Length: 103
Image (cartoon, rainbow, N blue to C red):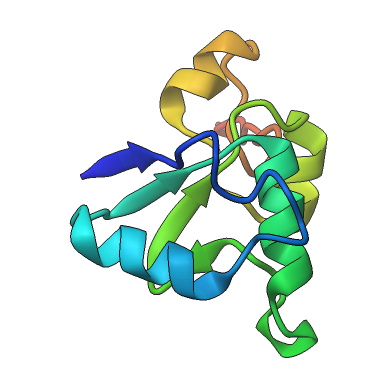
């Protein structure tokens, strides 16, 4: 079940704890985590360097709808199909090259 991270979580870097997020994921049976960009960067700050890129947590995909698409693509954050449609139908991996059939 896709759930949006509560507004009160990961808004203050001094009060953010990964244990809070683990508990929330397990208690709410979360399969996909949506958060705003400020929450994402506070979350990323808590992650060990070896955990980069921070596109998943406990195997759950992280979505950041208010982050610029280019930044999401650079970080490897999956962009939903609905978001792609809003951005002009371009896939998250960038424009695809078409191959013309030769005769």
